[in-house]
Length: 418
Image: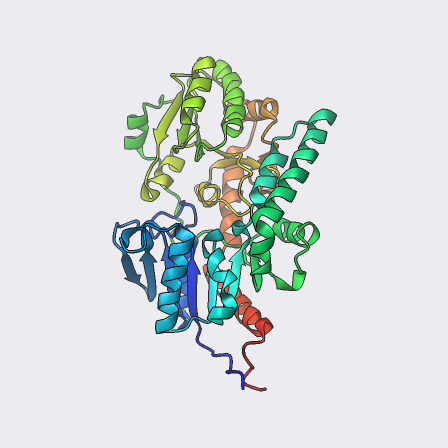
């Protein structure tokens, strides 16, 4: 006889990144979600890669987080393989009911779900859907560009779908998405059943999102002009075109507003090429590279901005840094083909543009800096939007409900009434 579906679940979250500090950090929503699951009397174990405290294990608020890069016995393996080995070890000690992979890190575990007798939930970030959005965002408004973009998207879709995504989707008992756009793309193009898609709008923890004062110490350190305007963007510097378009737009802004500064936060493989573009545009004194900053300091850098820009379309989820900027009443500019387009209402609580349209971006920035936009009202509406949308308690409840639906669909359990 099948076992009864228990009211208390043993949950394993698998993700390469699991920050416990910094509300604007990537994947920062995971910590409040994990704490929320534990507060509902579920057992929560996290398997992650690099520890923010350089310790192999952190136990806090009922959540046990294991960081495998600090484990010398299994750190020699790829993270996917190391995660499966650690999962198998923990599963033998106390069987998990469900494994939720927040990226592709849990792919190997999902492939062996029948052997482990565990349900697998996988976030849409495990697929390479974001690459399709990135290509779409680089399209220009002309026939030739649109035709090349359509061809590139079709080629990338076929390559990624048959390369990895099909196997990932096949191994999932349920897929988590954060936006309606993701759900539609999964259903229409990936042919994934709508009944196995679960929408949970993961964002950021809103409990401590008080507006931050601009750090005068940071402004001094960055040598920002007293009456100048600051634009902040965050990037992993893995794509040149995204930053190149922003630099081309900022070049025109710098001519009309010489005291303006562009602050680029982050580091990555394309940094030298980006620095070369800055040099070629003669923007060396007006573009500030901060390098990588800690999760704790990220909000302070957003705080010194008058305008926060993130034109990346290489993500399918809500960007914590954009949400943080909105709570700080900043004027935000995002990509119209990113998931943020489901939140930002263009011209009302922020702006949406096509990343390749640097001409309109430069004009928009000039309009903002010359007082032609009601920036204070836009910032106020942006803050209210985020606070009203992201309720941690609601996100936790929706996640738990999705877990139980997934477990019932697997057929491994009977309900208490059956």
